[in-house]
Amino acid sequence: MYGRRLIRNLSGIVALSCVLTGLCALQVLAQAPPQEQIWDHELNRWLTPEELGHLEIYFTEEEAAKVMFPDSEKIRKDTLTLTPEQKAFVEEVIGWKFPETTFDVFIGETRGNIDGYALIQNTIGKHRPITYMVGVDSTGECSNFEVLVYREARGNEIATKRFNYQYQGKTIGDPIRINRDIINITGATMSVRSASAGVKRVLVLVNEFYLKPRGLGSNVMAASKSEKGFFEALFGL
Image (tube, rainbow, N blue to C red; front, side, top):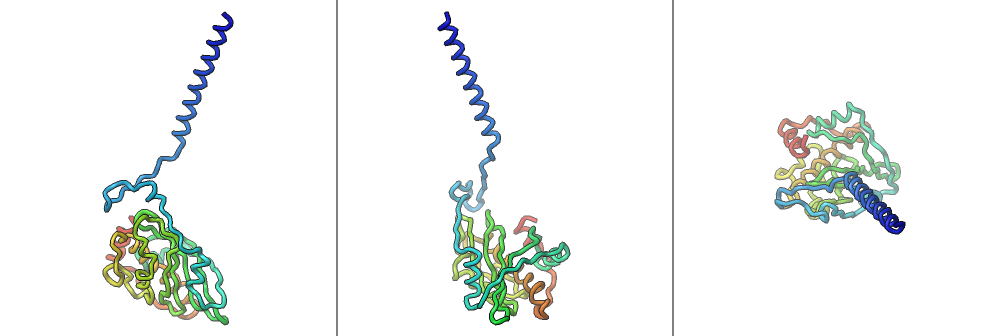
């Protein structure tokens, strides 16, 4: 009798434990974040976890800054912070709105003279943000473009010199647009458009907040309606 009662009690404990374990498992599943899914219209399928987790690191910020200013005696880091009015002005000029209000700026100097400026940019590619650095010389021309981190499974050709040399010499007066003064990369159109938009933003930021205060720089005009419509479509504004 005692043995049967003990077996029944143990069976009940085991059953209760299984129920509690199942409830805990359900709770964990309910709390777990849903797995991200992104549909690629060009590939006509969902991206795989491997594609979503793709990551290529080319430079650290400090390494990229040295590439931007290989002959400078020193490189110092500055932080550019925009007021709401300044941010609105830059958005009006470039034709698209952005969330950032601060930008990291590397400044190359030699014997007290400024060699140029380089800004870190993060703009969305096809599915993921691209981290890159844009260099601008002391006259306001783009001097270099280097990808620091690329997070897409395709289109990493924008990190190569045979592509990004196109930005060298560009100024705020240039379109910096695909099919106008930038040659596209097949399969990486969104990344190229995004990078080009970021180069334009850097040129405007340097012109307005570094060159003009020194008596240099150029006057800029607001983006046209067609340009604003283009960037609104590009960034989903």
